Image (cartoon, rainbow, N blue to C red; front, side, top):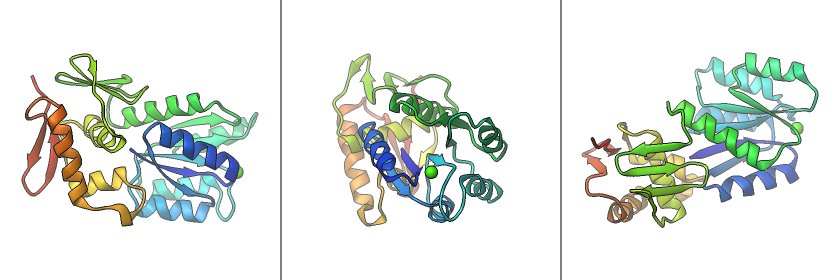
Length: 220
Ligand code: CA
């Protein structure tokens, strides 16, 4: 899952990047509104964490422009304490949730998980697919209730497929959502991660759809 973090306070941005990376998210960071708008317009993100007070273009304007352009990714805004007006304006501009500064990183992660699973149409923090269960609270994948040992990239691939089960997901989409930079993206590595995952999962869990990509098969 790939997150765009928009925050101009660099100390806070560094803390959040580290918190998010530890929770197995890939993070791109923008420290001003103009870069944020551009990144959100041209790249694929599963969710955005958006500070509102930003240089160059304020967060509300960035959000409005994304929504006007038809971008539907979930957006969590960071608002100043005791500023109810900012929250109302933000939600009206298309924010999905808000968090008041200062906040605990655990609360940020919980709200982010909720946004990600809601946007994928899931209500619970535990996603199930056949014999597999993904606990998004602790980045753990279980087979018949037993935790599997996965590398962070293997986890990112299966977590993305679990959030989008039944859909055909292209290699390009997977690459975009598990790598931060274009330079790291090599479609062969996706095949390698899938091959490794298949050794750990029941046969035919991840189906290859020829010419299109992969699909997590919802088993009866
Ligand atoms: Ca700020």
